[in-house]
Image 1 (cartoon, rainbow, N blue to C red):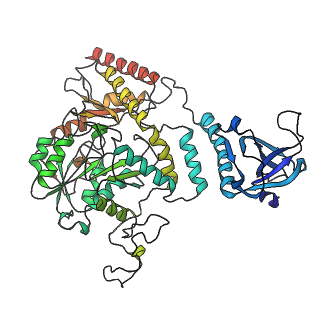
Image 2: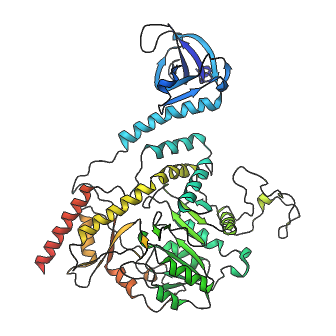
Length: 542
């Protein structure tokens, strides 16, 4: 049986026709597998009718140059979707030819894809929504067989670390955003950490961020935007946000800037771009770095340009709740080659060398440079110029992302449509709810539909969210609420610019529902009925 395994890739002649009893008594086939139990062989049919089958996703064409041994009379096609298990006794002639390894790999991968299609269509199809029994999630992964095929392809490559799919995914992100450099990492939080870390490098000279410097941010957001500031010993300066955009109050930010201010690090809240013109103008006036947390806004636009392409550095998250997913994953984007190199260094153990995986001596001076107090000519691959980490993405994750990003334009349109549907449902109750509003000049690919209760509402935020969740309708608060009230941040060194009145109001009165592409008309109809029923009952009580 072991000898049969070595026959994979061998073209043989079988002693029976494929589809009829007319004509030749033998047919060519390719051995593609063996049986562990018996001596049987799995074969794929081979045909010279190239034009009839080449259109199929499961056809692999080959010619003489693809053969390691033997001769074929004409170009042919391997039918990877036409397989049969045979006994070796059915072989009329052995080893007519042998395919080269690369062509064998192509065939075996195509055969694997057939199983993937079956798994997706039978196992991963969305289940039918049953009102009151099925959950209305606020977020979730939306995918098809293409993501699974890519994941299988990467697994079969078994490169594991950054490889061909990482390069492909990075290039697609760069093209989508219109940026020069994209570096993949293992999460959006790591992306924020790496972007901030890059700005602390001594290679930036007087421009580098140092302990005690101040960084403008907001308290009504996600912790991952703030934690790197604290971890590097800088002081976050929290500026209040505006309702109903939920983005930073630009006038208050202007007043918050002091001689200690060195950076602005803020997010596009729930996909709604902040006032980018005003922020970038302030940064220019005061010579400040800007990091654009684009984790919740991948695909949003501001004045016709994609968010994530304005600041010195921007970040993306590929967690399942976000616009596209790789499971865990993130990216850092920049148009500045020096910042790109610094991000790479911090991401890759702090290493000074910028060779891609599997490459050597890109700089041409691997053994002829002086670094620190190391001996002259010390191998550049093992020179560490930063205090770094290992925060790379795997190639399997990148493979999933490379398929997901092709769906991003459609996903963004679905999010916008779902946002409009939520607006229709909630705008019936103007006495109770403040509805979200896009920043002027912005076209958000909304991460969520955010709702704030008015003072006149005869119920509390926690009452309506508890009711919705009891009916299997997921809600979320606006992340940390007021992060200065969170246990992990209360004792940290920070400064509040003037006040956080809106932030506190959001902490107590705001929640959001999802806009992700997996939402259906049936789900919206169910939520509308539940909401209407709840508000009718509240009205009767009051």
